[in-house]
Image (tube, rainbow, N blue to C red; front, side, top):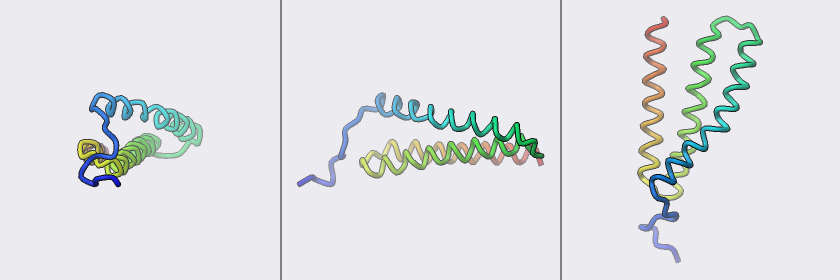
Length: 100
């Protein structure tokens, strides 16, 4: 029987950061397709759609990492995810304030 006080998986921080960076690759590829689609659609406010799409993708990725941290009982992963979401929302707020 597993002791719930111990982490389920022991991962050092450099491996965790490496996995996080590697997880950006599929998000980056999806974002590239999104940008091409938005640019080809000829919609108004193209820049705003691209910025909001990037923020949504990054927040989704951070939410995945928060869930992974909860599953593995890794508080640093959860903290990095929350900080990433807060920084993304802050950048989005600044973008919106500057372009309103």
